[in-house]
Length: 90
Image (cartoon, rainbow, N blue to C red):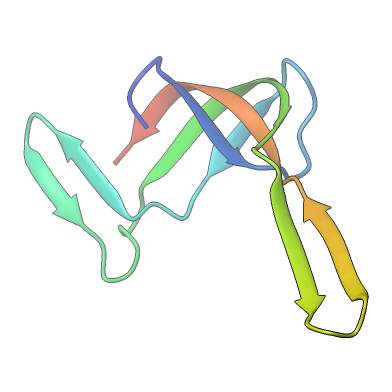
């Protein structure tokens, strides 16, 4: 995520025009350099504004059994939050 850039996050509890805080940050890059967490960066958090809810591409699951006239077809679309990053605290 970049400052004031748009990103998507897995859909969680978030309302339109509210703020969301991500406290599990894996990597922070700023003018001081790049800090990589092991597994998380200590004390870093990202604050973002929720822009809306979107769905990802449809994933189709097809299971066909040969010579049995049997098939199963299901699909899944993952929900995402569209967010705009407002602050990055390292």
